[in-house]
Amino acid sequence: MSSLALSSAQQQQVRVGLGRVLIVEDEELIRETTGLALAEEGFEVVVAEDGLAALDILGGTLNPARKPAQDISLVILDLMLPGMNGLDLCRLVRHQGMDIPILILSAKGTETDRVVGLEVGADDYLAKPFGMRELVARCRALLRRHRGVSIQEPDPVLRFQDITLNPKECRVFLKDEEINLSPKEFRILELFMSQPRRVWSRDQIIDKVWGHDFMGDNKTVDVHIRWIREKLEADPSKPQYLKTVRGFGYRLG
Ligand code: CA
Image (tube, rainbow, N blue to C red; front, top):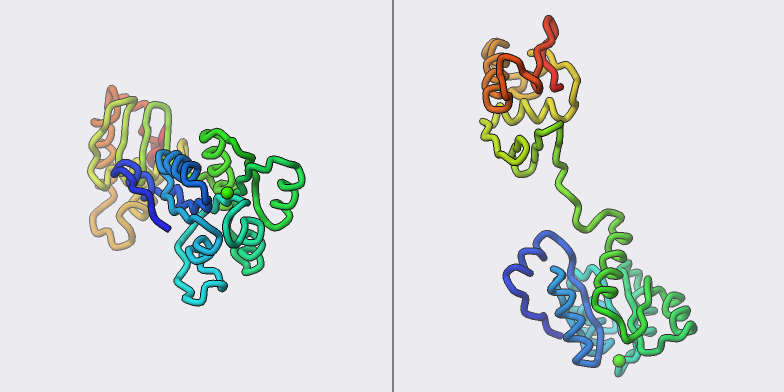
């Protein structure tokens, strides 16, 4: 067992959580090319040359030393392996209740093999020779299905007309231009963008942005709205985004 060396750019991607893939394959060339293709896509790659080594990594009970299982997100499993073959390993992994996606690889591209592979608990099957792009696509699809969410979940960015607000990065853009807001201005705009066209009273804005321990008066809101308008509006005296709703408060749009 060994880990492939990853470039720093690849490690960067690993940190955003594509997952760690275990490749179980006795043929070195296939092991290496498959590993590199997945590493280039941002997966972290762990390899095993036979079934017992794979079981060891997965923390199976055939291993008396019982090392703790590595956090493996997906197994790519060759069928013809020395020692324990791929089908037996797959069966054992499922028997032990490990709920991990398994993609079987085999030179035997027959229907029987595919069916047996799926029957012993594999999730997908790819016949050799296969293209790396297909392999990567299958891995992504398996992980997506397994996690029930996209593996590259987009940030929840808020948009209203030309304004884009990214809550995680605390950044606001008007078209392509970044707008620098103070933390309070940012929170006010975020509140408006979370529910466009909803009218917010000054007290509601204070409650949401400053909280209950706010000690000033609600003219503070007007001052902040003016500052936001100065940064955001083409003509702050005739706002097209943050509009005054006389007698009630403010609304976006
Ligand atoms: Ca093999």
